[in-house]
Length: 98
Image (tube, rainbow, N blue to C red):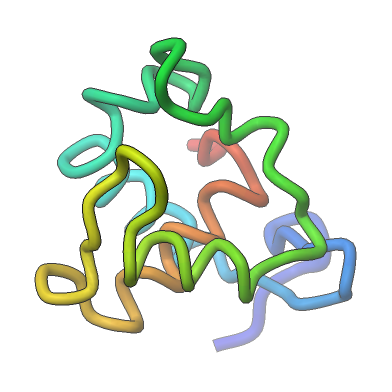
């Protein structure tokens, strides 16, 4: 499937994220992350504001989600690598445009 340039979000490193991946990330975020990181990724004082997460550090994001960091538990046993990549796509792209 081909997507128009307008419908594909890109990270600063040039990685493209298809709308379906962003939407899946949004759903995973709502289910697993929103209670701490908040609606639109700006949540409680003890959880990082994901709007400010460095977009050029996908490796840091994957490591943090997989293994946990500070007060955040590890999610590597609950989320598949594809799920974590979808979450990253959502964090980079923001709210899906429907």
